[in-house]
Image (cartoon, rainbow, N blue to C red; front, side, top):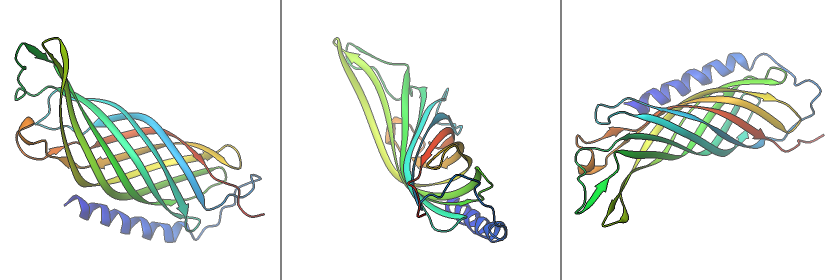
Length: 219
């Protein structure tokens, strides 16, 4: 099961942090920051290929969240993430009476996740890896028209999912850092008769530019 893979990754990363934490690296001339921070990200999304979805096209992904640094190497985040893709409208959706259905539909997948991160600060740089899971809300949305009026069909599903990530932060001032993050999301959704075949993989890969702010720490 995918949850087993997430837990195995966490165990491996904890082992790695014990080795990495043995070497002390100091941030040069930038002052100290507190353990709390907030972050945001914006980038592209590449959905996992699914036999039940045709002509998939990834769109945008966004993230906003906050975290707490427990030690130099270990931190925990809670974030909200969303990724969107466009697909061909399934043949199961027929046109309404005296109306039409758009040829392309949208699937958006949103999550509230808890993530454990292991980082290795090296001067201004901090590469990191992480793993976690959360509650995912997926929405299938297709628009059309009937008798000249706009119509829409919406199907939703809520499910648990997991994620793995890796990235790097570059500290540009005492409080601000920029970076990049790759995130692999694994989650399924069931949209009923709209997409036959049961559960559909609606996860994928996200690559985002990130911005992080931390308040100043004690002198």
